[in-house]
Image (cartoon, rainbow, N blue to C red; front, top):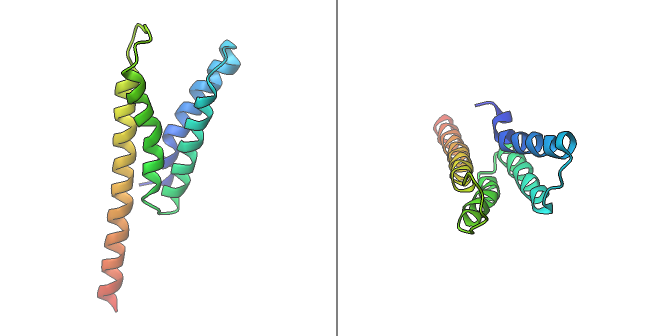
Length: 112
């Protein structure tokens, strides 16, 4: 797995909200900047091999699911599916890092 994969949510959300700011000229919530920072921090920690970084990336997904419980009058309810996808993505990335570290420790112990 290429390590750039850990930064996919940060790239997608930065491009999407960057287009909204620059292309359309709309203002966005300051909370979006926190989400993107969480995605970047999580991607960096996963890049360094820290499986706990995935839990930081799950925080925006948890917040999305929470936002789906609030009635905002939106036409398309996209918060819950995107939150579930984000949580599943970071859970899989964290499991992959944990499994890879466990296998590398096992291989190092067998070589000694």
